[in-house]
Image 1 (cartoon, rainbow, N blue to C red):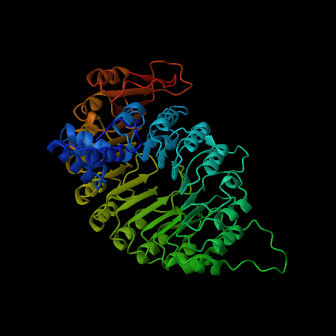
Image 2 (tube, rainbow, N blue to C red):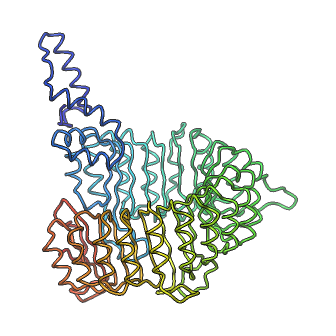
Length: 601
């Protein structure tokens, strides 16, 4: 089959036409056996959707490599600097969906200086001329400009889905371009982005005729929106299933939207407080009836600036909920109990620690189908008095035996509670325990937390993601290296005794892809112990550790296919000093857009 995309947007169609023409003119030649096999393989590969399976197929031989590239429609790039746009486009010519990730996760915690990079501009510029049939773009931690969004809207006439997660650099004027020019847009999801207020009424820019919108998420936008335009948009979007509102939408306005969209399955409620002035003697809307009419609701979130008196409004939908996000709702134990007692089907639950251990006990008593739990701190200071502890964790482990993923912030923890979770919830795939105070031991025995985390990697055979904290010695890392054979992502904070700790991990975890370390006593010897494995990893991040520039230069010399960045604070005058080491594999030369505070060794 032809690999020259510029001749025809769908080369296989042109091939079929030539074959038919050959039959009609008597010039048809039967394809060779190799061509037949290649055609059969391409048709089989169309049904192969797993990225890992496709990557494995591409390694079999050259013909399979070509066939896989020709049939890949979904392109995933976990690091925007691991490959150039040119190389990706030359290999994959029929892409309709792109997932592109930029900055490492620790950038979410302000551990990376601003303006580090991860620019979308070179990617969208290249795709604009090479992927005219592109339909979907998912970006995470990328720097996206309004001009990028304008080019995106102009270049892809069949564009349908845009998802931006933890991105910045753009504003409401860029959103206006997407809304006005992408006439087939089905999904516009803005999740935890920093969106500038350009004083542009982007909501009004959607087509006045009926839209194809299925999902609209803008809860991260910190500026008022034109509610009347939003109300009209919802009314003319019969396919809308997901809607998440920002905090400038009151519960009274939410009521008006729900009346017009009873078909919603996912709803983010906005502020969940009333900014409307109800005249004396007037009756407030019947919020309970509005929720009751939305019989398809399975996911609720939002609840910003919540007035607890409005919580009973959601009771009618609680029995069907599979996902409930209270991570912005400052509610207490009793307020949670009044809701959670109805949520027997709940599988995903996010909440603030303001609900206390007793609130988590109520969750454990009711939510037997729970698969994912996240407990966030209402006060993230290290010296704060955390209202949740090992009591809540143990209750969850005893009541929610089907749990697969947990993120738990607390100030106090015990080995016994973590060991109990490892035994009661052996299907855990993700275990992230964040003990916020530095180097905190088991608060009852005073012992390090080694045995607790050791039990997690020993008993949870499916574990792929682990975050560790608290007082931990090298013994904890030896457990991880010995038993964490499936661990792909490891996050370490304020932990370890010596270089041996990191050595245990790098030598013992063959599946390790992403390693994030901050404020830990690992130096050059620990770094050198991973030379055999770095080419197999997506990245290594180390900040505030005991590395020397000379040690980093040794790694760079030994592994020329690895990009080794040392990053200093923007205001640091010492050119040889650095705060962060960021290493990642790349098929390209070191990037040319590095700012002055980044040195590529």
